Each structure stands twice: as C-alpha cells, then as structure tokens.
Image (cartoon, rainbow, N blue to C red; front, side):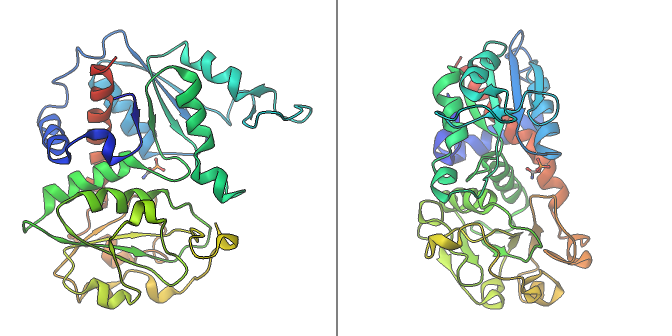
Length: 320
Ligand code: CP
C-alpha cells in the first residue's frame, strides 16, 4: 500500500478487520517488520489521539518515529506555487517535502481544511503534493476531507461491540460553536457504506455530505425518526459541505441545541452504543449522562486508533 486515504486502499474490508483483530490480540507480533525503518509524522494541526496512537503503532512494529509540528519550530511553509515569497513564509513545500522525505521511509500527514476554497480543500492540495513529490508511501492522518484512520478504528469498534449481525448505525450531526471540517463524517459515511450495516445519516437541511462519500446512504432529516431502533449512534458536528449551495461552504447554518445527543433521543434507540471520535464538547454535542453511560464507547474507540494505525503501517512496511 503506497497511499492510505480511503477504505478502498485496504482491499477487502473483512480481511482488514480480521487483521486488526489479530493485531489487537498480539500488537507486537510484527515488531521485526519495522526494524531500521522510520516513520515521519507531520502535523499542520493539533492532535492528541492521532499523534500518540500513530507513534505507538509505529513502535509496535519496531519503527523509529520522528514527529514534526510544522507550526511550532519549523520554518513557516508556503504551499502555493507561483507566490512571490516576500511575506512571513520562509520555505516552500516543494523543497520541504523531498527534504523531509529523505529522512524517512513512510510519511503521515495531518492537514485540515482551510475553508478558503471548497475546490482547494476537496482537491486535497496539500496531501496531493506529499504524494507527488515525496516518493514515499503517504498515509492521511486527517486531511481536508477525510480521516481514514479514525473510520477504520470506528469500524473495528462496531465489529467488537455489535450484538446482531447487521446493526443499525446512525451518524448524527450535532451543534458546535466553531465551524468544523467534514473529514470525520465524510470518511465515516464512506467506510460505513462499505460495511455490512444498516446505515442512516441525519442532519438539518443544508448539511448534505458530498455524494462521493455519502453515496446511497439513507438520509433522514428527522433526528428522532433516524434514532428509532439504532444500535450505534455516532455523533459529530460538521460545517456546511456546500453541496447544494457552494457559497455556504464551511459556514455554520444551525446551532439548534435540540440536536445535542441526550437521553431523550437515546430512549428511542435499541439501547444504542454512543460513539464520537473525540475531542468532544460536552453538552453541545452530547450530554454528560450519555457520554458517561455504560453504553458509551468513546474510550475503546480512541484506543482502537492504535490498532487501525498498526494495520496501516504494517501494510505499508510490507509494500516497501
Ligand atoms: N480523533 C482524533 O483524530 O483526535 P485528535 O484530533 O486528538 O488526533
């Protein structure tokens, strides 16, 4: 595997899930695979889970790890070609990428949506440059539009906790004070569409996800109706994807607190498990009672980030 951004990059999902369970049972089984290999993790944005779980995954495989926080200590990077660099940016990504690549074998990059242009974000201008100019395998640690390591961990968690063969999984929008990217819901929709589940998406009008990710998933604008009989509820905020009105891309269209996941909605589910990728704003996205309930999976879900990252790095090491 040379690039990891999509569920399609893993091949058959049931094989990848089986591999994840095998690694979970013995996470150090492949510790010789990464000997004398180096993973470089590049963060243009903050992280707690991705940073720690991916470092741990690389260590599970015997790799060396270098972490670079681009905005803390590195030269400020220009990302656009053709710009006269007479401002505060001292180095261009086109030199920085091959230099960074020369110190490692595999590169992970986190670079969020900038909300300056829907086209730029959805074309993945930063990540595509890493793929094109590094000459190294590149995995997405949350890009402008996708967060595949998270969705893989989410699916591992659903596989572990499901109580019937084909559970009902609901992705629900919830309010947030800031405009957040669509990376997590995009990937969650993409991955759940590939899984053997009854998948429903619910959000206020105007928050329609990009068709390349939401595909043929059921969309239900009535949140209570969507929650009926659910086995898993996955909450997340996202800003306007700009599908129906491109001029609204990245805007907050609603802060309707009736969408906050509480016992009111959970009461109509099939005693659903609650999921969120974290970090989460309590009593905006979800009430204290729901996130603290025994049915909340937010901690096991975060712990499975180590497993999803170990599988992805293992696949990349095997393809070197
Ligand atoms: N869920 C997730 O990616 O968490 P971090 O932003 O802390 O890495």
